[in-house]
Length: 150
Image (cartoon, rainbow, N blue to C red):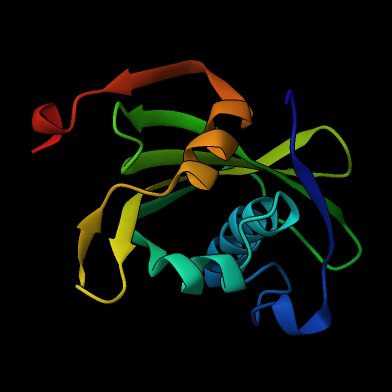
């Protein structure tokens, strides 16, 4: 899979008193895009509940490049940037583009899969591994050994 992208309409409620997008809304766009990618490719909340897994975040960072205002057309992309060799930990990248070609922000999210029953990090089921094998990847994509990430 080469690309995953969601188009978003900026709402009046997304704006701050300076009439540009509120900083926290950028993070919401990243979360929406990540979950849309998983859901649209079969990893629904029903599947996660069945396997007692869920994604958790360790770190999320947004670098703001251009302001977004009401009326801008927004698209958010999803790519895997790093993946542990056991598929338990990951880094995902999002680019937020406005009006087709202007990079407004980049989001980096580092996380893992958690066993929701044991409340511990876990290795995901085969459905997740299969999906991540096909997921779009950044130009700098790499695998890492979990022991190296400590």
